[in-house]
Length: 324
Image (cartoon, rainbow, N blue to C red):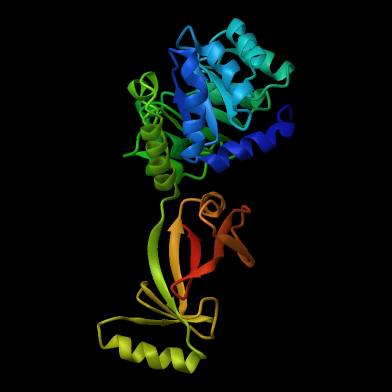
């Protein structure tokens, strides 16, 4: 397949989870904007050809901020595709499926996210060996429900939905198994870019990255020395109206309290948080000093991480991540 060698790039975009869609009217703002995105925890950006300054802005980011994974958006013809490559873009994004642009990208070894919104569009991509596509315009084309429908006949395809996505509906998209990452512009509003309000952009990016994780406290785990001690504790908690469910390695009280059948990780126990992607959450939390305990990893049938513990402890509790 033509894009097998680009799996690392797609994996990086998937790990980021968010692709800011940026319109830059003044190329002199490009470097400051790229650094503001990085400071907010986002290392990928799509600069669109919706301004006269786009090509120069891409060139500045490629030269001045090389750690940014730079993409070119609104690539609607071959001329723009060639300009994007010359300016240093590492991938291309188009609103629709232009066969000439897609074929040129394949021939020139450049990853491309062509826009699709129908089964016929998707089949055009599959016929060329493409399994990662842009879903656009997402909300206007059926949104989450349409992506769920695509998952049946096109289970091998990952999508980057863009168009109408914001902080309010982000969660509903990113939790879908067939969504690689989400494209959006709410964290890089034009007025913020035009006025160089980098701190505000960094703040908006930080909020978006945190929201992307979908963290939710789902249970508290308490260590007990053995099963008998766990059952003794469960009988006391039943007084408060909780229901006991005994498992092989622990006893649950409803779904909120887990009584371990041995002294496990954490001096006192653990805090269980669900998240949209354990892999992505590990990368996010590493920025704050957390490290995965690899011996605790467990995987789904399709090779996604479903369980991982972290170090260090927080107030005597280990952190336990669970795939939502």
